[in-house]
Length: 599
Ligand code: ADP
Image (cartoon, helix red, strand yellow):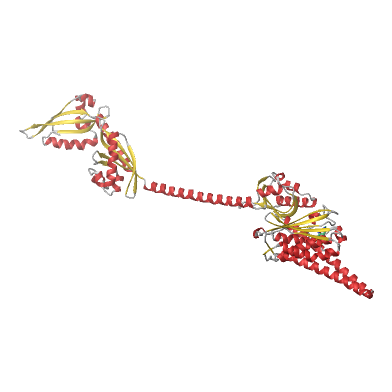
């Protein structure tokens, strides 16, 4: 107000753009001030009026309108007599550039701080001995402290001793390497991913650290869970694989060892796999295509049926079963029960493959055929003596004067029927396995001698010579003597029956292998080569035998064979028509119970 003048020095013109005259004309100092800084100037004036110097920073508006920061050094010129301020000596310095830099520095510092506070990572600057120089909100909040309260505190005092020690090591590493170090550690149940950066002094040594810490507890937990889950999954896969492998091996074992032929074919007929039994049964001719099974069937009707079944399983997906007689892999004919089964996966409605299985039923078929023949033969063989009986009874009524002759004939017929019945009963017992041997050590020589003694008169009556040639010593043989007697009686009486008078029948015993041998050789009618394989069959009689000896049943040799085999022995025959036959029985000294055939 009432100051005479303000003397301004410095590069005045350069700073303001005014000459001193222009400046004064424009209103002087106060007028040139930036309006916001007028209040500051008033405070400064108050100081000057109390006779104190002022150094202040203000904005002025230049002549060209530009705003400049200036530093003002103002000294009061004091009139002691008047006791008041009379003038001000001032020097003005342009500090715009410095002010701008300072402002931008402040702005960037605020920006950085905001950035640090915004992150969920923990961040701080730390002195070499562990003092917090500055820290972000996240860190302060994590330990429920104010940022201000933390500055100056020591990080090592806050940490648990063991964690503190291990972290000190990391910071030592940073000092030594002057490179950032990153590590993960754990404090209580919390996991951290940490990074420490060295802050280097102008001389290149580490002055402080910038530290970032990210809590990774959740990540660790998820990692661990994932690991557990993966391990669990792996284990499950392993277990499942093992199960599948086992199941596959089991199926393979079954398929490789079953006697049923099994093959899996594509619906187009290509065979994909077949088991060893399939190869044995059908041979290599049925290796690639399932319809080649038809090649193995010679019967036209059966072949047509199997062909039809194949079509049905493929086109109508119907399970098929059909019986056929095939020429097997080794050329032998076999009866098989063929099954064609469409195979579909659990999740599929349409089948993708075709399972073929063949069960060998030759044995069953043979039994069936045998039964049929047996019944027919038995009916025939029973009918013959019964019609004989009726004829005799008729004659007896017509010609009662010949009673004696008729009765004898009737007795013969009845005797024949009784024999037939006895033999059928024996066979039935053998078939049902209820004929149990009662084995005892016996001397075969003694049995043979006794039978020969019994049959000698019969031979003599027929004009035959019966010779006996016994082995000097025979080992005791474990046999059912009653059954073996039937065997010898049968063979000796056959020899007598089928040999003419004047001929010789030789009976002998021998030691052989691990057993004993019984032999009957006759000079009888013999057996033709065609008949020879069949004489041990039931009801089998040669035509010549029927003429020679009417009373036979055709069951004797069948029984002989069964009884000998039940003892673990063998019976064989050699014969030439019109020259004679030799029947040989071999019996083991001690029948191997397990090897004994049950017929
Ligand atoms: P059969 O009661 O007819 O004798 P077998 O079963 O004992 O019944 O004999 C079956 C057939 O074997 C006889 O019918 C006969 O054709 C033939 N056969 C058995 N033994 C002799 C033999 N010693 N010589 C010639 N043929 C025999």
